[in-house]
Length: 235
Ligand code: ATP
Image (cartoon, rainbow, N blue to C red; front, side):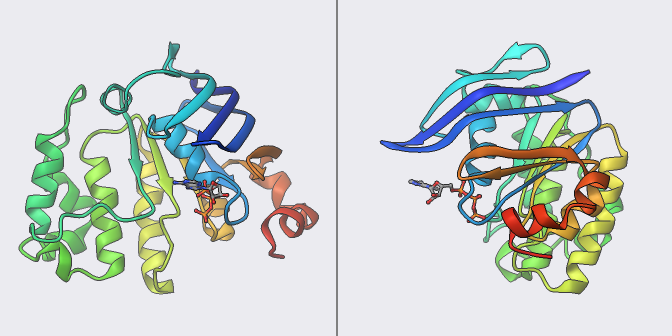
């Protein structure tokens, strides 16, 4: 069953044309990686899906609904949740308060209990009385993911979740996200850390200069060092 379909999607910042006729399909319970160099348009793609881009054209279908012109709130309420690149944590609120606010602000879907987040993220349980500003980068990222999860996402969009994290924290995040993807949630993840994304995902899209460059299974991509070199400058 199709969860998300992009057809001929174009996006603009003012007069600057950033996405060009982008196509993408994501099926129920898939984990899909969106890869590409810095500036290729990955963040813009996620912002186009969530409706925060100033100007978008083309067709975006979410579970049979045309959301091409839908508001940010209605897209979120329908179950599309973004964990943005810049971690969205309230600095003066405690971990518990951060989760409670995300819980109470949830509209359109039944939020999960705060306590459940402490089962998934034991480290957050230990830190529940600490303020957001006193958390490390890794702890803030866990909290940022937990704030999205508590709102029972149907489609979870993760924008470079490992950025700036120490390797040991990246491993912790991997364990948590593996648990998340085993649940009934569909995931689109962008990453500079290609290995991280490809370990988690089954299928991948590569975009280059805002346009589709390649799509296929992770198994196929792992055999294609030429693609990794051409579009991702690694390998
Ligand atoms: P990164 O890994 O650096 O975030 P990305 O693949 O996510 O890269 P985007 O952030 O989507 O790329 O940027 C795509 C293009 O849009 C870039 O050329 C960027 O300079 C431009 N861009 C991004 N945000 C804005 C903005 N607010 N106003 C104008 N141009 C922007």
